[in-house]
Image 1 (cartoon, rainbow, N blue to C red):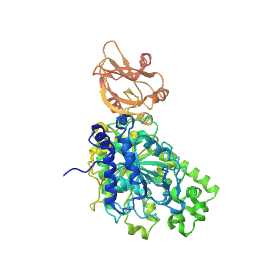
Image 2 (cartoon, one colour):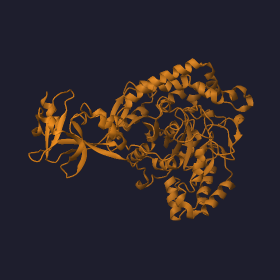
Image 3 (spheres, rainbow, N blue to C red):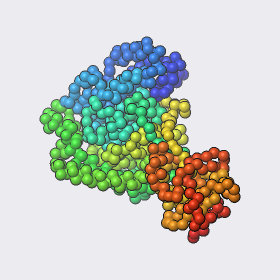
Image 4 (cartoon, one colour):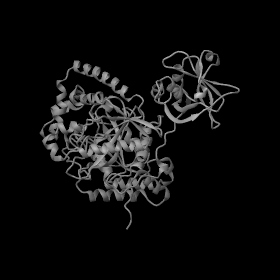
Amino acid sequence: MTAPLDLGVHALLGAYRDGTLTVRQTIEEVLKRIAQAGDDKVWISRAPDADLLAQADALDARRGEIGRLPLFGVPFAAKDNLDVAGMVTTAACPGFAYEAKTSAEVVQRLVDAGAIVIGKTNLDQFATGLVGVRSPYGVPRNPFDASYVPGGSSSGSAVAVSSGLVSFSLGTDTAGSGRVPAGFNNIVGLKPTPGLLSNEGMVPACRSLDCTSVFALSCADADAVLAVAAEPHTTPAIGKSFRFGILGTKDAEFFGDAAYATLYAQSIERLKALGGTPVEIDYAPFRDAAQLLYSGPWVAERTAAVGAFMESADDKSGVWPTTQQIVLGGRKYSAVDAFEGQYRLAELKARAFAEMKGLDFLAVPTAGTIYKLSDLEREPVLYNSHLGHYTNFVNFFGLSALAVPAGFRPDGMPFGITLIANANAERALLAFGARWQRAVPLPLGKTTSQLPPPERDPVVVEDRVPVAVVGAHMSGLPLNGQLLALGGRLEKAARTAPVYRFYALPGGPPHRPGLVRVAEGGGEIELEVWSLPAEKIGALLRQIPAPLGLGSVSLADGTSVPGFLCEAHATTAAKDITSLGGWRAYVKTLG
């Protein structure tokens, strides 16, 4: 029996390059799968089959150009609040519909790279919701259990990828719409830094927070899409050892879902096994900021986007009652409320960033639980807000985020975690996410697709400078936070070549060492080699007081790295501690 076609981005590209697959064969398979899926409520509109096959034939005729078309023949879907030229944009509201004359900028970039738009996907109306049920076009069927919500607002986009109908899809994310559906569909959801991907051609929800997002089966596939959709940018990598923020017992909220709580605890252990050190954070500023989005003046930004349409819409417009209630609720907020909200947000952001200092990322549940469709009929607003408990703050704070699969409940429903990092850390998150997917083997969506080969995993190439530290900058000592704040990363523990004298300089606290190279009579001294982004070396130098400075330190293995050295004249009143072999041993003598 022939194995099903793997629609993973890299799987298709490899087959095209090998000459074992044509684009027409791919599109024929996609159309067959869509037909077999039946009325799954994924699509609001689709490109005509004949047009798709014509596009496929045109690409097959250009097979010689595959090298310059990075998404050659890759089928994808676009959420129906993103314009696709010649197709109707509805934002899941029939009365709002219009035919797009041009494509959204991100869509056009992908098409120019050889990708094929299969159709426009269902969503929570006007991207207002995290559940995926607020649409007059129906509820996209969660492929793991149709009685559960698919997640929203990018419901159709996530289900299309998880069900193996397309290779990747575009969603949007204001409060979590690019992450919650990923968690509920066992796929990857990349939410870029606000502004990294163009929002031109998007129906706005909250214009100041909206992001175009990417759903894919693997981090490697999402990275291939990001490389086309966004301008290149550099980012610090997440090292083999890293620090990640976690929820404490008092902050972990799973809304009674013991299975999700267990899966989160297991995820923390898996991150530790990958080299991570968990650091418990105070979640309060993140939680309080999240509540501003639907319980504060930012609701008025939704009113600004589509409130006028909502007020003039008649019964035939297909306006969803819950959506209308939320959007028009913004009318009650004043300009004073808006300014006070900004002040409150700035305060919370400062507190949150203090919690994130020195961390490579936060690791939180993508959602605290998952609900059935029947649950949402009883509590359409409260349960929706529960799903944003760990998502709403991210765009407020200008952060990047990556949702990755992390296991299944005993009943087979997926669970995911989201890694949240500083702005412009997308490539670092995707590279780490690829490590995670290899270490935590899970199905890709609800498909039989396989992870791409390791050589396709994202790699972050960055300019970092090693720095040897011998004193209070070492791990766990008083000045180590200076390195962490500058993006420092511990690379290894080592010793100097036996050509140094080591001194405890007068003064303090903090007490400081002095490392001096000598012609004879030297010893080996314990040190740590850290690395810093090259652009942060100047900031480090400004923090180093005389008589210390940076010079070349010779290591016991015969190599040399930049490191802390001391001017010899400053040791005349210092205590020689060379015989102790290192600063930690000296600190122990101080009691």
